[in-house]
Image (cartoon, rainbow, N blue to C red; front, side, top):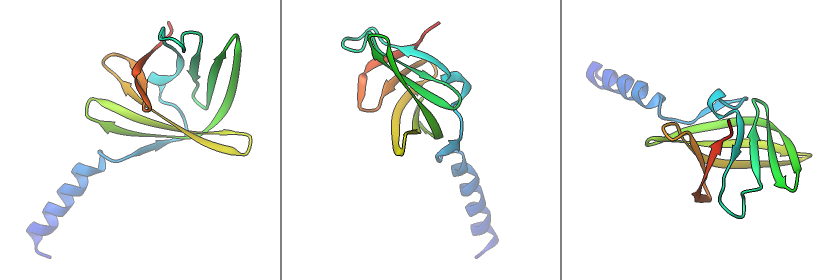
Length: 120
């Protein structure tokens, strides 16, 4: 391999290293909090992201809490795709959503028309 080819390869690896999936065992600080939407039929629902757990508000005051195993993130243009891997007993689940840092909102990957905002 020539020096030029090797130099180009090193530069390409360095440039693409920041573009891949990032993994963490905790939820990023900007996502920690309670998220709600006014959109029916989810207006009485919420989800809460804690550093190490996720809580789903199931309506009528009910909720379920689950420990988080890991969080993965990947940039998608101006948005970040987050995938949260969590447990419910022995079952393992993953939950994906898109975070908009400019609008500070979340949209579920499978329901992008519904906007969730952090409660203040």
